[in-house]
Length: 464
Image (cartoon, rainbow, N blue to C red; front, side, top):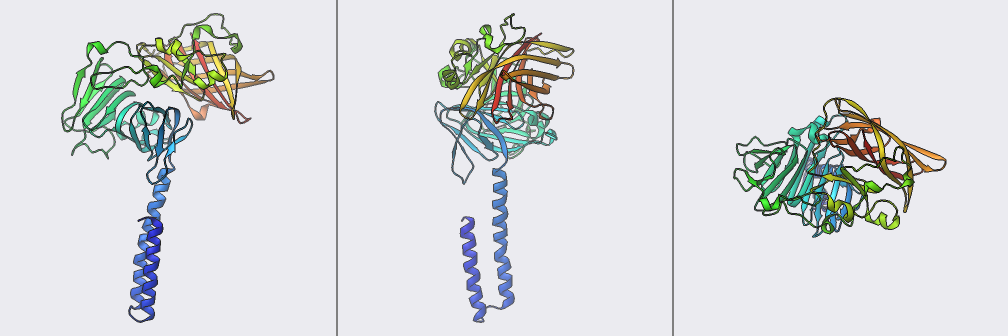
């Protein structure tokens, strides 16, 4: 019974009691007591409705990009069609149809990818940038395949982070893992860091947070190459070797685990309609980047959305010409214009000491204002990375027009896996990127809201 029906029933009941008082059938004191009892459910209904509304209004993240038919729905409310930039709320049920997938960027900068024919629920996502250690995160993959890269909340509060499937509870030890789930089994593969996996059962409830202390729990980490973990109901998780025939480089985004092993998808099925790669060797003179005389073949590759390539053919080339050549493709991030990726075969090996200055060697940027998009010139830039502290400081100058120079400034952190993320309180733009090649090169995406109401989006590549 909904709230309106409940209220109508209670009003009718009180009217009948009032008529009974008038005819002497019920004393006034009994009537008053009945009214109070009747009012209590109203208060409870109001409180429940307010709690549900508040939970539904908590933003957990945003859609980074979507391909095909993907729906978002809070129970009891009409489903929404996922679109790039749309908020994702706590309580949202996310469903991808066949040949569809979606990438989410969460409020703590975590990354979630949901593959075709999958269902996921954002059950809890409490994050405060000032108190990340108090974060409470729970994600439930009901079926299908998902890749998860933990953010600041998950890393700071590992004991309150949980990724569930119908059969398994996954606790966090690291940052990048992929999960396949159905009603018969769960399979987990780790790209970076590690996870603790336990079967759901009496000593490991799906409603709990953090890794389970179950005697059946097992750990899987990235130091165990070419293996995955399989979990069935109430059984000890098994670590299995991927068949040798399947361990060749995989050209896929958000690699998932199939019945036998990791299996590649075609680029058309995964990202052709959404991301377009950049050929770093042929940066055009229109960007006007200082020190561009020395062209650099970077390990990181970027690209534009295919629709933007059709609008503005000058710039980044087709993803089939670049990303199809990247073994075991790893997506770093995406914004409204670009996607950034690198090969999973790359040995990152981050330095733990030293402060270095980097030179800007390639860049590309655009301004989106309502339905219009225009290319703008990146003039110069500076990047300093302090590997001992795990911090970066950068600035890029962009010429919006001949008389207007826009400054993109950001400070942030570089984690031990080379991921760069800006600190909002120290930046006028959002930055997300990757440091590769033993700390010798870095590439990042940037977004900055302009006073005119437009959005400046770009990519910058650096070497030292």
